[in-house]
Structure formats: structure tokens, C-alpha cells
Length: 112
Length: 114
Image (cartoon, rainbow over the protein chains, first blue to last red):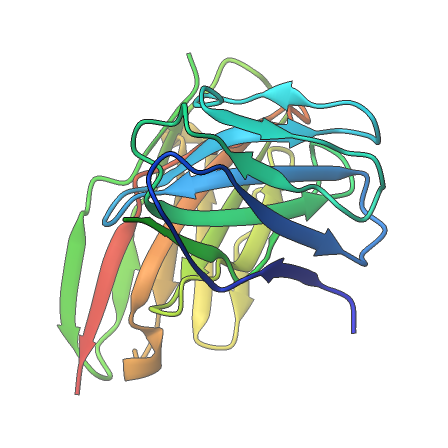
């Protein structure tokens, strides 16, 4: 079955530690995205990548970093510079910008 | 400037009632795409529909229907005979001319009471 997987589902980290969230897709999509969602709020774009080895900042990129070495994978690192990292993180992919974005199940990150 | 407004923050209805979720958008482009997503309590966003600006036909899928009106810049979503499983947050979104960045509405929380 084609889809997007994110791991882990729940993640706990101590303050000051970097943490990497995984996102893998087998839909053969060129574009991938990372969103952040805070409780009761909408989605905010962190980073997106149109093709391998290329990515662009979204609206709230500060404190985050990404890489796109493979078409299937788009990991997100939440660095210690992110002041309030506790949130729900959603990964998505699409064929192009005009195409539908399909989402993974999300990762809930809690920084203690 | 592009914008998506979902003015209804929360709607609560009794099961089997019909309910309409409003979505009003702003864009200067003539080519754009509109989307609806459902976010159940589990958190994953589920794609419901994609519409391009040149197709104003209304869409019906089972109990779900969408009314796209360019004259009022609206893309409203109606659930007929609502069920408890329809309880979720629903998001409307806009993509201008294939822009990779979607413009998201704030979402409408729909509560269906048994």
C-alpha cells in the first residue's frame, strides 16, 4: 500500500536536545512538506522540498533543519534553538505544487 | 493578498442534522485550487476534495457535497444526515497557480452529538 509513514508516533525529549523526526513516502512524489500544529490551531509550514537535494523555508523555519538526500525521505531535525518545540508535527507529500498534499499520521513531540 | 477564512470556529449539531461548513477565499490569481481536509481526533489529515478554479460544478460524494461559487469566492462543504463519526476539525485550503505553499484556513471544529 502506498502512503506516508512518520515515526515515532510519540516522542519525548529533554530540553536542549536535538531530535530528528522521520518521514518516508512510497507514493513516488517529488514534493514533501513539514508542518507544525499547536493545540487548537491550524497548520503552519516549516519547510518544503520540491525535488531531491533542494528545500525551501516555510513560515516558521527558525530552529528547524531538514535534508532531502532521497526522494522517499524528508527528515526534520528540531534543534535546541527552537524555543517552544512541543507540538504535533505532520509530514506531507505531493506530485507538484498544484497537486493534492497527502499526510502522514503525525508525530507528537513533547519536550520536558 | 491570498487568504482563507473559516469563520465558524466550532459547530455543534445533533446526529442526522445537515450541517454546512463555510469557506471564503481571497486570491488575485485566475488559476487556483481549493481543498478540504478532515482531521479526526487521531490527528492525521484526510484529503476530501480538490477543485480547480475553472470547474464550478458542485460535487457530491455520498453524504458529502461541496458548493463552489466564484461569484462569492466561497467553497462551502455540506454534510447531510450527519453522523458521530463526522466529528472532526475540517480545514479549507487554497493553492495559487500551483504554488507549493498552501494557504490554510483556521479550521472548523464539528461536533456531532448522538
